[in-house]
Length: 313
Ligand code: SAH
Ligand code: TRP
Image (tube, rainbow, N blue to C red; front, side):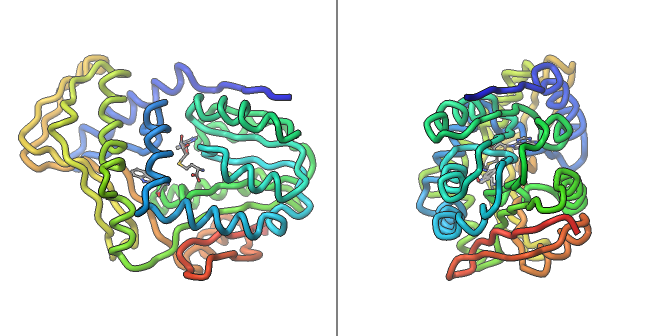
């Protein structure tokens, strides 16, 4: 049994327009990462996860494979935010006794694929296509004890202030007895981190440039994708990776739908994402600031990645 609720359509185009207008008219240009994930972007992200340099997916998956039973103990319903591919949900669902799975993602293709791919597991799938920063109030009412999973280190893609605000909105989904399963990438050798965000095959570079193709298509713009190069570096002060697109030559871009003209100087950069790396202390502090208590932190032998189990304080 499966159903998919869609809460996007026109509202989504509106936020892209607002974000482009806000982000590209500032002295330091920036776009929020949720616009990467059109059908092509979701496909490229899955290719990133399979690259030898991209350790987060493999490491987190290994933790889930080992510890699913414990993470899902007593859980009736798994809600997954920014769900993406189904491999991780499958491990959690097979390891426990949940009877309902609620994948929530901006990408309609991934939510529909989840409903199809997990149909055979004997679990009810109730997919929600929506923006996790705006539509958490539209989830179906809970079906028993809930685990809310937010995996892949996606929490690191928020700036610190909005990260805590977002965790607070997750806390609002948790009744007594419910839990949050939060996947976070840990601080480690910067060389390993930088390689993960700049794979030799160039998949991450293509993924990064795809956001320009999204703006071209959705907002009638004329970005020349070949005129921008992918940049990824670990910022040691903030302990986060930054992804940027750097103009190789001066660029003049027209964004038809907004009646907007944007100039890029030679080597000017557009920030497309940050991916924060965490310590146990930072995770506990962020959770506490959001009204959550860290009950357990499950990690791999190399301590590269952690899944935190938290509940409403
Ligand atoms: N959870 C998966 C995918 C991580 S990639 C994993 O662990 O591998 C991030 C996912 O979050 C993508 O599927 C993307 O479409 C989704 N996403 C990004 N921003 C979002 C937002 N604001 N609302 C809902 N989904 C979002
Ligand atoms: N949440 C993922 C991460 O921070 C998303 C991601 C991986 C990503 N590689 C990327 C986003 C490259 C933009 C560009 O690890």
